[in-house]
Length: 67
Image 1 (cartoon, rainbow, N blue to C red):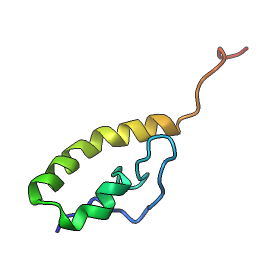
Image 2 (spheres, rainbow, N blue to C red):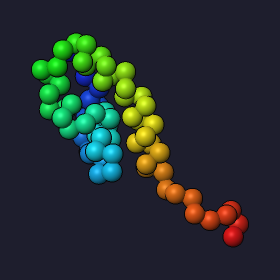
Image 3 (cartoon, rainbow, N blue to C red):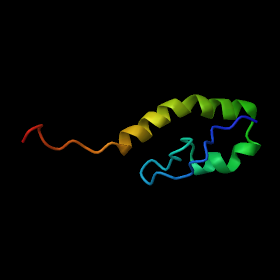
Image 4 (tube, rainbow, N blue to C red):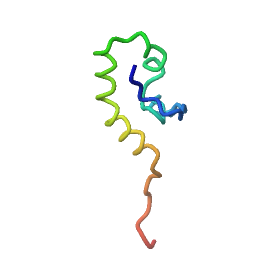
C-alpha cells in the first residue's frame, strides 16, 4: 500500500497537518482502512497542502528593506 509518510511526524499546530506528509491526524489514523480511491484523492491533495505548510513556515515580512 502506497503511503506519503516520510517519517517526519510533526503536526503543525495552525494547519493541523503533518509537516512530513501533509495529512491530517484522522487521515493518518485511518490510512490502512481507506479505499484505494480515498487514498488516491488524499494523495492528489497533498502537493497543495505542502504549499500551505511551506507558506506557514516562512517568517512574515513586516518592514521595508533597509529600514
